[in-house]
Length: 376
Image (cartoon, rainbow, N blue to C red; front, side, top):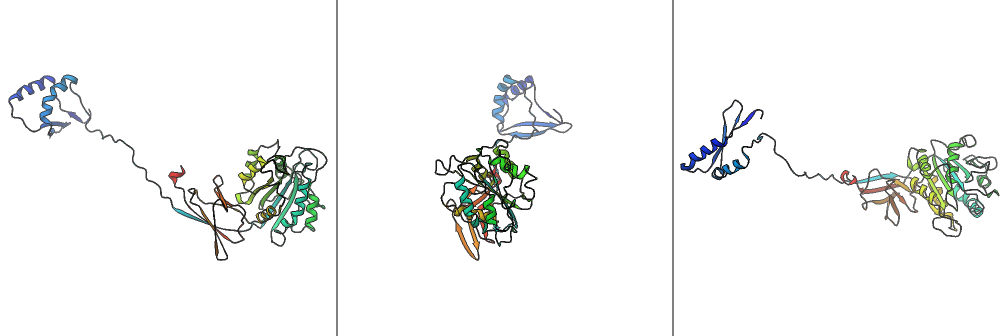
């Protein structure tokens, strides 16, 4: 061994020592000596000396001499207790503000079964437009169909009285919108909502030039009594594409007026893919089977005008600890999870079911912040 020597005796020496000790006076301990190289031995007395003197010959016969590295660090067993991170209470205070620019793209399934719904859209459009007129917003409102087979459709904005879209300077906007609304063209086709929207925003750059603005919020409103039958872009690819359009998630929405539960009067099948996109991107889902469309048109108008129903949390919350209230004009209103709002983990946001906070209202979201240990 390097740097030290363990002093031990041969079997013969230890036997002679044992014989010599037969008549010795017993002592209460024995001495064990270690010697560092070039130094005097260091000895210590053990209280187990007598016992060791008696048993030592047996040990030696069993195994002879054994050397141990007495300078090795001691072994440490077990796992130290982890320190549980603190779980602080956090409050997000968010002000309801409007965005000065907004683009709204209506997408209508113009198959033969949709003429009744087309009339509902036209009848309710003045209600939707009220949220824009005199608001000071810079808005674009356009319309496409889900038809990807007929020339003049395939993602192209439909014209109304010579206008590709409605803006603040458009004369008689209700009449323009009515003429834009596409009815059944007399030719059957597969309803391809994803393909049509992708074509309108990414491919039809010449006929739709100027409609989509980088600085504006974008709200898509799709109406169909069937599910999506697109073939050019998958649902996941479409969601990924939409995610790249706006830097902030609250500046984009995908709203679906579709079959939510089937069968129902007015829907051939459930709009599964459209609903999935609304849940992934954020937006309103409304049953096309409802007779009264005024509530959803109001919600769409408020949302498109920049008033939000969805608010994003700054940190991950511990579930079951979220509390939401809204302060408006000095009055605090409390809201109950489940009844008034719901939390979406994948978006880390709370969304009001029907309520939309007024402009400049403060939305307060208080929660226990998920600790690093819990989050892992």
